[in-house]
Length: 98
Ligand code: SF4
Image (cartoon, rainbow, N blue to C red; front, side, top):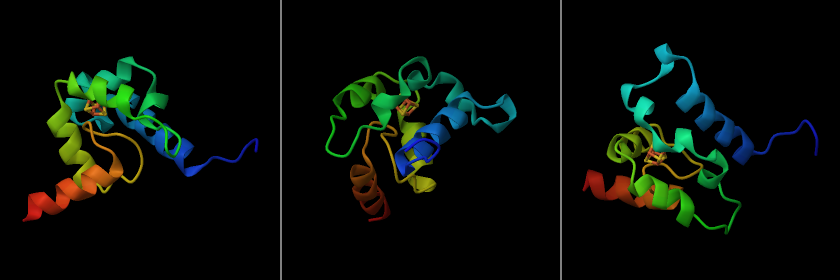
């Protein structure tokens, strides 16, 4: 429906703003985010959609670990961050605490 954003669209916009936002709002690692040079839609696949392309990009990203830690620390619920889905990040967070 026009004018109504889904949670995925909002999360996608959030990622775009966070990565491409004003310098003073960026963490230093965001300047090296490989996804900023690609199609951000790959990082927010539809439910059941493939995460392979996004994860392939993350695997080559120099700031993957910092991105992952940021997403886990901020409980990012949508999208691929640091090469992991939301479910994988939850598991990672549990293992990190153990
Ligand atoms: S690890 Fe992936 S989501 Fe994170 S900054 Fe790099 S390319 Fe983007």
